[in-house]
Length: 259
Image 1 (cartoon, rainbow, N blue to C red):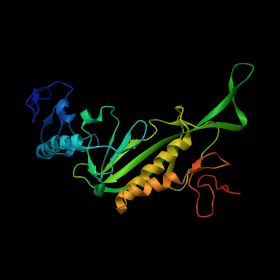
Image 2 (spheres, one colour; image 1 turned 180 degrees about the horizontal axis):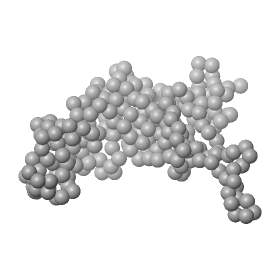
Image 3 (cartoon, rainbow, N blue to C red; image 1 turned 90 degrees about the vertical axis):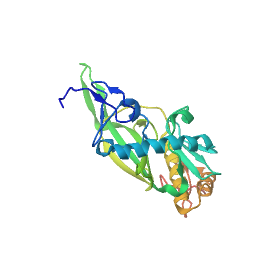
């Protein structure tokens, strides 16, 4: 067959446009059918027609799980983790009309862990000379921003994790570099995008998600994170919302909370 021969979707039978083909290991798929796959699935090109048909069948069955899902707890601003505590099920979605989006519904027992990652961005601030040129301060000054990522590890036949940006882009922290607790893994780069949201809001949000998922893994469900949230206090030194450690110190700056 030639490069520009007409192709047809192996699932709905419709003709595929010139730039609309979604290649499979042994066939072709149109954009409309591809949009029905799980948003967390990323191995389409290495999947067979049989593999994809199995997933499409599962996705149709998932609609019943969505219809029966009754969220009792929601965590997140952009992407949201929704939890049905009575049925011990959860889902993650960025759709305002999540019932129509058909998000994957998972059991608590399918959770395998949670990873929290922060990308630190550093951008040098410069001052303008009398001749209009920009030069570095002495010593150099920098603005810092942070992007918060959550990865929920799962046992699922079609994907291994649910990974998303908790902050939906970098969060401006001004000239103050932040040091999260050891729960978060940090990487750094040199690009800059500003968003207005308090650094510690997302830090606490991520910790709440991790506590919830860890509770699922251990069999504790929603009970474990609820206790953690209730114990949070405001650090008098750095202003962070924190859960004091065994010595009564802030988990972020190490300052004493009491006394």
